[in-house]
Length: 468
Picture 1 (cartoon, one colour):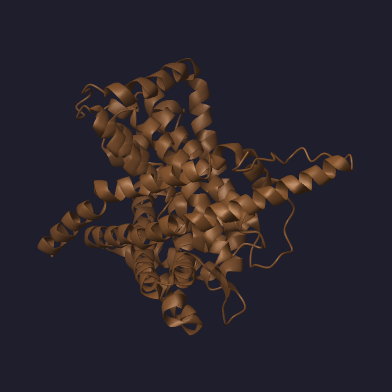
Picture 2 (picture 1 turned 90 degrees about the vertical axis):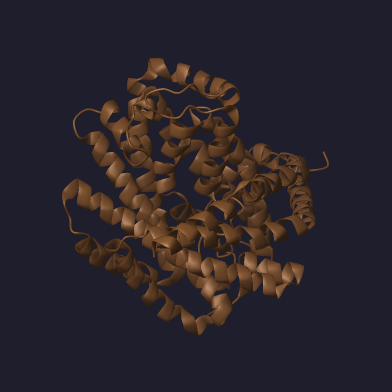
């Protein structure tokens, strides 16, 4: 078993090596160029569509906001707490800048995924929307075998990195903090997971729309309280982030010092892990949105990367830096908790981090439940959905109760392999994304011009076009 685990660990390091990271970021760079920085110019409009626009009555299963919350439920996870700590403890504060850079390009990738997800989605035998990479690979590229590969990798990854690994994190934290037996945690977690996912995407969407904002606000509020308390250190922390990104960080506090390449490597890899841009998971949720316009939902989808990395990961990173916890010699798994203990009085810091890990991990479980079921539906049809949901809930109990080194490494491999078919499709269909975007922006500009002629100026529209 140890030999098999070591083999999977080695294979995982190859799968997640430089070629895949370069392909992930490179795809974002290409799309950014072809879309002419759309993620920057259209971000205000995207945020408006996400948080202000009324619910849509167009075809689909869940609202724009709920689709984003399902994607964020799966995306905002332990990587926002432990992953950022890993990046900064090994790569230095400069790794945070490279996380931002990865997110900036990743927003273009997430936008393209959203466009293709809605454009090529179908209505399944249950009358629900089904979409994602497997569908735009089959219907856009005409490569069904490649879509099958994606669905196979995705369905397996859902049980590992989206299920058992997260359940194990919840059980471990409850045992450490409150002394709760992992068996009790496993039973309770499997039960509440089943309650949510047996209701399908509409139920997952409703729960995510409540839980994700609450858990994110509580965690970010804790971060802001620390940053306010250490306000005089924040400017210096930001300066250090930019300085160390290009000069590296000297070894301090027993940690291995980082050169520039190490800062880049850790920042990029943790950024990709955090926001999942290019992985092919989020477009599965985007395809369920109530919309007739692919580009509108795509704009909403790209805000997920902004929220996950630019906001939540930045908060974690700055807290680690201003409190000095990043080079205090603490184990990486406990680094963020140590920073919160330093930054907040009493036991509040530990409580907020424990709350964050538990709810971030649980939200990942229910978000990935939907991703896995859509991959399973693509492979086996809608009749497989109910058995899948029961088995998925049962594996939550397994994950909370057993040691998972082997599962983690195998799931990590499947998660990385998901990206390959998706990135091939994004690159091959980038022309379709640009064409759809040009059409959308031209129509948008035309509507604005009509309103101006009528004396009714739409102050939300930016009126940007790729050919302006």
